Length: 335
Image (cartoon, rainbow, N blue to C red):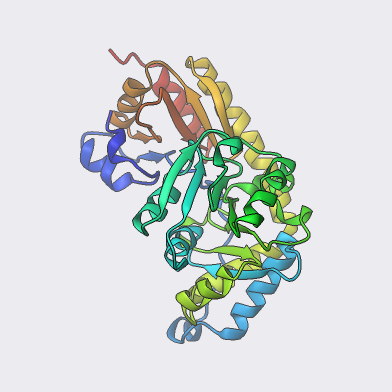
């Protein structure tokens, strides 16, 4: 299996090079991005020619504050995708920190902090993070969908405060269920930073829009580092409209849940054990995951493999035809 080449989902370009004989069109199930996208608002030519409008940026911040129910006086810092935030933030600390990442989790967090010169370790429980100045939790987690109750996160804050530390909670997949988010249940974010992402739930990975939300002084440093135009005019328009459309979000959550149940049935039929996930992706465990990855890729279906793990992550098929093609390919003999 070529898992070492697929550190992220969405590498359809690479898959086509590695499997040139695969039939077209490919089905890309390697990401946790919804196959159903919010209808993008029209951006006027004048908005494309000019620099992003400062007033539009403030309107987006206001809409995001209401949509995410951000407590006062926390700052909402727009990002060109949450990946931009998690990549920049480690460089904003003037001294090297001890960083603990609750794992296994999204690999970009550890990579970014290591690149910035910090001491990074992966821990398997919050209890193992004692002594760390920075604690990173992906909640719900990628790729297994693990969700930590808010009470567990609250319990780690007192020792972090004593060390003047910071809890970073990556909520990139929290839109699938409003109860996932920490933001509506906390009064302050002095030692907590929450990352949110537009791309996954709204089916808009290419828009590159996310937010860092915190009352920690890092917010001002992050805003200064990103400059006057942190996101594009397209992202401003898209984010302002999507985050205000509550009816669409309700329908999307229902549609995603139904699709997740459908792919679970297909995976169970093929001998997978559902090992976790959210309604945006499913983690299927199988002793022959390496062979199945290659079999699917040879047939033009890309899923997300992992090194040292007998499991594959499946995004949601966007149609009954795609789901049927996945089912039929999994039934075909591999050997």
